[in-house]
Image (cartoon, rainbow, N blue to C red; front, side):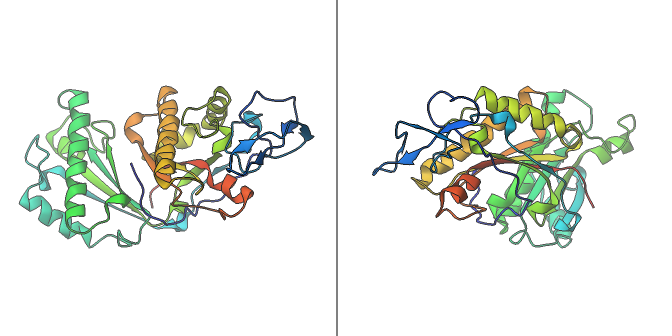
Length: 319
């Protein structure tokens, strides 16, 4: 998913890596290559060791990835979250995902409850749900198609597409008993959760250098270990999550299209590892922000290093 918005992520900034290496094998402990850039802007080694040397803006792999200080931050209650639930019967015919005219009217009725306006919000998460009748995989697909139908209508009527996230949960999150018709009707629903500011979400931020080799979207083994270490610390947040967003970011060095693609690859790589280690895939959306959401100046090596990152944002609490 490409993120066009240039809104700045306002989650608390995590500690950055203090030990990085380049594109060659890891040097001895606590000693690092002192990288410089040549006239073409390429990352090169001048041929000598330097104690404690940092690379010069080279997006490289980790020397001691598990030492990276990745902080887990609880979301701020003042981030403004608005939620409303629309019964599926008000939107769709039974077992269908085509929005009815009555469904469009229903959305407009609920739309007045949105605070803030979608154009001003960080994002809106649209989550489809079903009852437990039928095949679970079919229900999962139906719930996502219904969420997509609501998304498409909102875009058609002026909502910014890049701010809308789609999740299909199928029968996984009942709010009533599936043993009665009344309960099943309650479970067939579409939720719209509007997140005013990113700081409302629990967050983990990883420097890209701690997870990936230079200019690569494939995680290193050290990067996977670092992700696992911090995933275990955030087990409760991830388990209780209503929604998880994995966002890849780059600095502004190089081609914008290349940076966009790299950010998408890195977000997908982190998402896939989370799924492989037990996080529910249906809760996760990946976003490639490219160079569009810097948290520091791109005019310095330190700033660019901060901007090259992967964030995991978690919606676990609702007001």
